[in-house]
Length: 275
Ligand code: ATR
Image 1: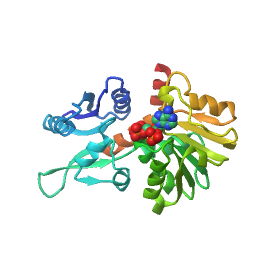
Image 2: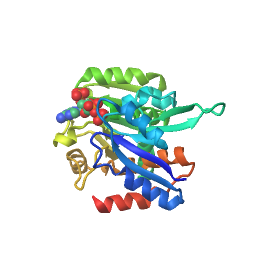
Image 3: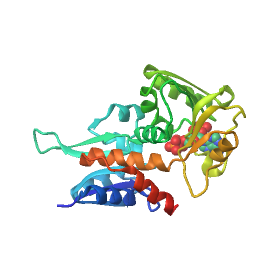
Image 4: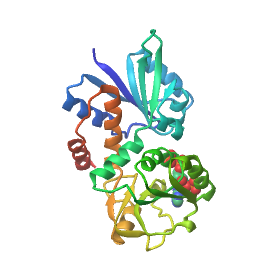
């Protein structure tokens, strides 16, 4: 029987996840169906229950439902618990009865780390600057810190949010938070997790931000480089956009559902061509 999966979002029509998972399944021979579902803003839990009653086995969750998905989980990965949000739901029996339990995980951070590694970025010992302190950043800090020893500074327009975020992760490693004025380069890796690129904005950053051979990563992607990546390239940094992270987080979800790891390179190439 075909196993059903989906991505929940609102809006979700633009999502590349159905194409990504169809390509993965094509590679591995898994018999799955993967669709995009626009859940009502006021009833994510109901949409999930309906999906499960129709044979759904697991789901990805995107904006704005990641926190609600977190709340409906019976069991969470450690990193999902820390993030307070999940992008992957897995339905499974508990092995003792027919009660089906919901397990949640967040694969964004693993996706980011894998994509950085693919680009040859050395994380151990790296001085890392993370821009932004919203949900996107909270979801990736744990995998970054456990790659350590790294030193992470989180900088945000609203400084207090970055301070709180850093405090929440301090037991995992060296991490500090504050405003953009507290940024002190040089950094080996600068990750833009703000949504400033959407508005064509650039956080206020000093010109000497980058160490030699530094990498700039933007979680956003598009046909053209983001304002941040253009700015970084002009200052000599290697640049990486968020498309690889998108494919890698999907591959990790696929692995958790199906137990097989797809080859991400051809899928990334396919998406790049279609941008
Ligand atoms: P997400 O889930 O994508 O992280 P979010 O939780 O709304 O979304 O967080 C958006 C992040 O982008 C925040 O860090 C926000 O800064 P504030 O906390 O000060 O609001 C940041 N951001 C959005 N627009 C920005 C801009 N024009 N310049 C700098 N930072 C911006």
